Length: 91
Image 1 (cartoon, rainbow, N blue to C red):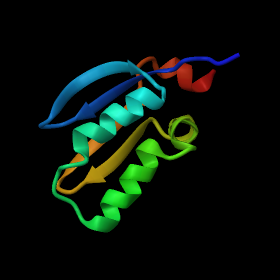
Image 2: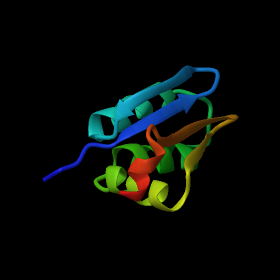
Image 3: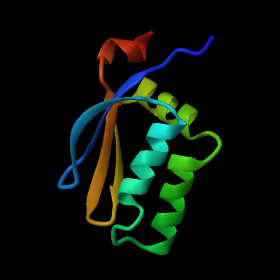
């Protein structure tokens, strides 16, 4: 049985904080929001894999289980992802 996790996603200067269900569609939407921002080719490739790769959802869950916020640099900006309900991370 799959358990959906609500996450809080913020891209300062681009998107206000919003609660979303952590799933491949949400990660793809984040990727579409940032993919054309100025960044190096290496960073572009890394972020594409982080948001659209086969283990993207699992990797976000793993990171949030150990840290309260996942912060990814996107050129001069950043993406912040955290649990919408912090007690979920300990479940």
